[in-house]
Image (cartoon, rainbow, N blue to C red):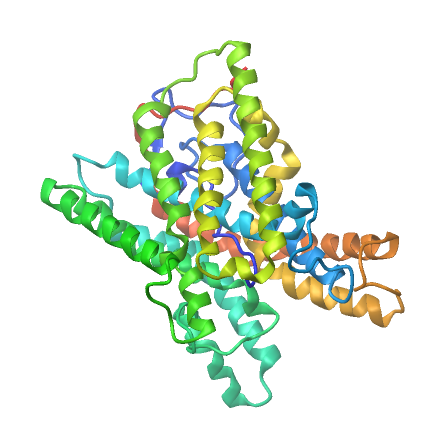
Length: 434
C-alpha cells in the first residue's frame, strides 16, 4: 500500500449510531470514556485498545520505512522474519483493523433497527461529518499551504475536500500530508453504501436486491483478480485496489461480526470456564502467527503484492482481522483485559489525530535530526536512529494530544449532543471474561 491510515475513531456501538444502554442504566464503575460517547451508553474499552494497537502498526510501518530509506531495506525476494514483517508491512494490516472496526460499529445501529423505525440517515451523516471533517479539512488546508508557491496553488486542496482522491488523476499530491488520506475517501464510500444497504434489507425484495449487488461485486472482484479486466494506468489500478471495491472484504467482515454480536453478543457475559478462555487465547495466538506469516509472504513479494492476483491477500488479511474482532467481542479470552490497558486505550483515543500528523512529523523530525549530524539516520536501525525515532514519536504524541483537544473535542461535544439520550435495551457492559 502507498501508506497506512485508520478510519477515524468510533468509540462504541452507541457512539456510532442510535445508542442503547443497559437495562440498569450506566454502570458507575464503568471506565472513563472520551468525549463524543453518550454518558448513558456502554463504552467498549477493548475496542479503543484494539484501535490503539492498529495505530502502533501504522506508525511502526512508516517509521521503519524512513529509518531504512537508504539501506537495509528488504527487497523483493528477500525473506524476513514474521516478527519483522509485522513492522515492515503492518501498516496495511492496521488499516484493515480500522476498516473492520468501523464497519462493526456503524452497522450495529442499522441492525438493531431491523423491524422498527429506521435510523435517521441525516443524523448518521451529520455525526460522521462532525467526527471526521474538522481535523481532515485542517490537514488539507495545512497541506495546501505547505505545497503552495502561489495563491492559485491552494485550489489543489479542493479535490481532497470532496474526497476525489478516490479517483485516479483527480488530485495532485500534497506531500507529506496527503500520503495517508486515501482511507478516508474509502471510509466515505462505505458511509454512502451502508444506509442504502440497510434500507434495502428492510424488505424481502430489497434483501434480494442487496444479495444480487453483493454477488455482483464478488463476481467483479474475482474477475479483476483473474485479470479479465484492468484499468488503463497504474494509478487507476492502485486507486481501485484502495477503494471500497478492493477493500470490501474488511467492511464485510466487520458487518458480519456485528450481525453475530447483535444475535448472540448483546447479553450479560456469564463467567466462563478457564479452559475455554485458554482455548480462546490459543485461537488468538494462531491468528497472530498466521497473520505474521501472511505479512512475511507479502514482504517477500514486495510491490508485486499490489498487483493482481496477489491483491487477494487482502481477503485473507481481512479474514484474520474479522476473526480477531469476533474473539474480542464474543469469546472467553484474556485479550479484552490486555486491550483495556490505560496506555493503549489512550492511544486509541488519539489515533485519528496521530494518523493525520505522524507522517509529516516523522519526515520533518527525521530531516531535522539528519541536519543535526545524526549519522546513518536513514541507513537502518541502530542506537541513534532508535533514539531519534523515539524522540520524534514522543513529539508526535504530544502534538496529537493538542489537536485532539483543540480541534477534535469541540466537534465531538456537538456530536455527543446529536446522539441524544439513548433508549434502554438489552445491551449491557461486557464483563471481564474471567
